[in-house]
Image 1: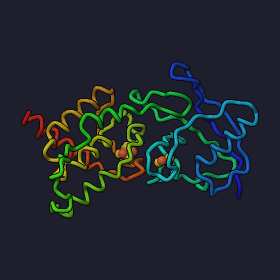
Image 2: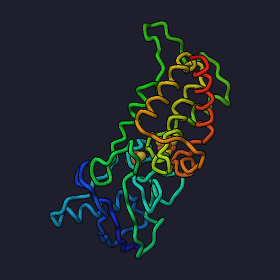
Image 3: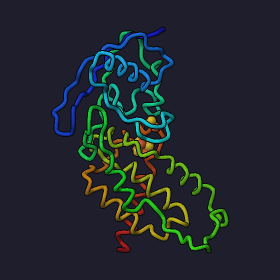
Image 4: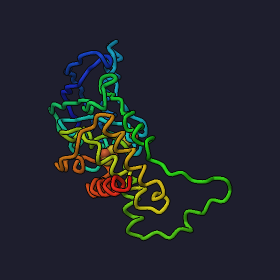
Length: 250
Ligand code: SF4
Ligand code: FES
């Protein structure tokens, strides 16, 4: 059955505007629509009324890019599990519902406009060490020629599924980025190609994370629950072990 909904949406003109929640009504919303398609309907309505559409981030709309980043009814990516906002379906809501929609909130993710936040702090953490250096002069070894323990390969692949959406930060009462950084450190720490720069990588990425203003992990586990890719807390434990080993070496 199609739904009529009330939306309470955070509107903020720019980074310095104070911002406030504004109420909107949308009608005839199909349960088969995605959450972003529902927002498209609202924006069409606003444009037709000569009002400013709601700004929100999106790109792939397939759960891959990590761009969509809404805090829906008090949960990052809304009430479903293992999905991003673009994969959230309106069948998770019912006719007559009021839905609260806010941007991800964290000091290190300042609001740019309405529901869009600046997550370039994640990019700077990646630049600090989220890479391996490979000689490409013609004598590179084929990656498949390096045997890797199956369990390590599987764990590295799982860590690499992190899409950098920032839901872990938004869900954490301390705005900790340790699930994200733990995943990015782990995907290399488990593989021989990543071991060469492992010491500098973990020290530099954790330093950048702290410099950006992310908080500390106090093991609430909220990040793991809300992560659309099921990134395990085990990655934080691995990062802590890597960090301790690197500090002792350094
Ligand atoms: S760990 Fe999960 S919630 Fe955090 S950025 Fe990666 S995919 Fe998003
Ligand atoms: S728009 Fe790409 S993950 Fe949602």
